[in-house]
Length: 346
Image (tube, rainbow, N blue to C red):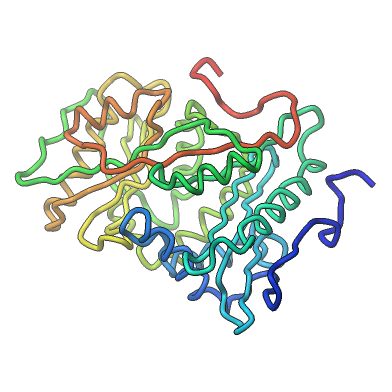
């Protein structure tokens, strides 16, 4: 039997006496979030996970608690560790994470989760297009040097840095520059979800690591989030329109879990025909201006530190600065043709 079809019972899941592992259930949500946040607070001083958002993730139509998660329980029945794998078509970039509560480290639990993540990732190789490269990815805070060393010991290598950038506004931001044939407006909920998604997919084809998934899967995920996210505010989704076409988008959230007084730019992208015309900066200034009018003085976003489209330079120009950095690690599961975007020429 080939490795990608191994049964889970064949991998080493040997835990300390009295500890057990099993798939997560919805009843585990609060304690699993608490485990991840305990690790995040230790490293970054802030919680990483919003329970409401994780509930939406766990109920996603493309995610299965049974096959895509594992928790570790102590002899007392307490969840002390959590791992998951996000794997969508075309199954060539598989995202994973694992956390062990600080009070339970040094007992081999992390190694067990790493074995499960590796095994689970390899189950997807058979679903990837023949001859394509398949890799497993994990993100960590750059300050978490212990976990980074752990990943390297388990076959991962550092491939990318990502920046969390913020702006603190003590005065109204500049008005968006007047652009020829461009008008910025909010999106129409219930009528433009697919159009916005198509624009985002088009804009992000030049971002490092982008792989085009199935449109129907992406739209299902998109709709699921819009309908179930209590923080979704359609009045903060801005579209730059050009003669009826979406030239670019700035899709914002009113707050972040770790800092309810900070607004967040979830997605900022401009499609190729409208780049280098000031559209992105206009969208950013428009977004900052709306936050300022609402009394929000801090706004943040995440960006590839080596952005292929020059996004980091744009954000610096807009007055944003680095708050902290995260790292992306990769483990190749199968060599082959690379389907993801690695350079702007792709």
